[in-house]
Image 1 (cartoon, rainbow, N blue to C red):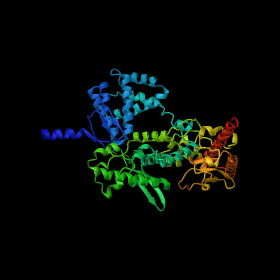
Image 2: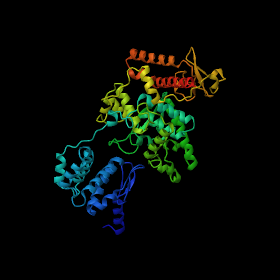
Image 3: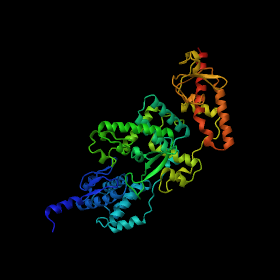
Image 4: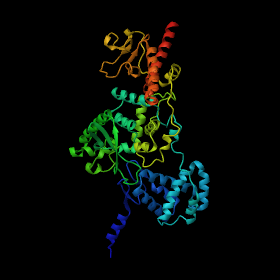
Length: 506
């Protein structure tokens, strides 16, 4: 026979469970904290449900919380609550209320109804009371749409869809220049370049630890924690090896060392703990570290995905790269770079299975958008097209000077930039530059093209070379590699023309 204290202990233990990501949850808490990013205010449903129904609701939600992603649990709670507010207490789970709700949501709202159906089906199958069998039979008769997936990709949405090659090149270049100019911190640039160059989901990037940086036989990798896989699910339970370029690997090594120094300043960190430190830390969580070794087994010290999004917004604001499609600053939603990776693979002729593998999808049901209605690359760019796009793209970042003498370092013959036969302008940088001149100069903010420089001949050569490569390879992707440079040279030509006209008018 159980004593009162033992029985009390058993009841208390029964009221606790562990979510998929390892967070211990008190069953009766008004809010369930399931991860560093997701808190579910389960008490919101209590005002619409009887006490017994609310307890059943919590049991079903706990079932999902133990085996599914925290975000998915949050979505189920949101959709259930949305229905409760519509139905009220009197009509909950009745056939009439569900039919009315279906009509209220309409065709576009069917994905929301599908989430509710999933939740109520599970409620019924687990044996908890409250959901009538006729409601389940109604659900079985409905064919509900899963929603239009991939719309930003198919439509090439200029604000949410994949970036063009010109936009991508501009963003990468501008971010590096902003970091070199001290406008972006090491953490900012490391995070932004990881987002832009790997195409991983924000939740995957924020889950990275220092030990995920790998170097094997002069090849560089990130062992990225997988997401959205139910099998072997859970926080950092399975990984995907993602190849990265050496420059990104070296940048992330600097970030790793900076994180290690910061942790050592705040707590006793032994060398064997270094690899378990987060690559991108949540600084607010570092204020009260406590038992660091225990915390390193959870996500509590890792950056929140909301902070990642804010960082990308900050980077976008600092670099303020203009899109040649919209004439406005490029919006840097992290998922745009994921869409860009998939779109580029589709444009290169890769199949859905290859794209699914590259994007770490478990199947191909969401990869069709990358191989249908592919965005076109301009097959031929002539001067007229280049001159039309150039003022919008603003690829030229330097300053035009009337004469060599007006240029910064104008008195230094070593600052001259030549196309091999004629001088085009001056370089205003005092530092070493290993970039190929004059190809890299027109998009560099240190370049000072001369007003009377032979810029049009540079443009002619670039256009001819673009056509030659296209004719030789038949590959527009390869042929268009210098399209942003073409727009930059075109911009210089137009500016020089305007300046000369202004001088002529006196």
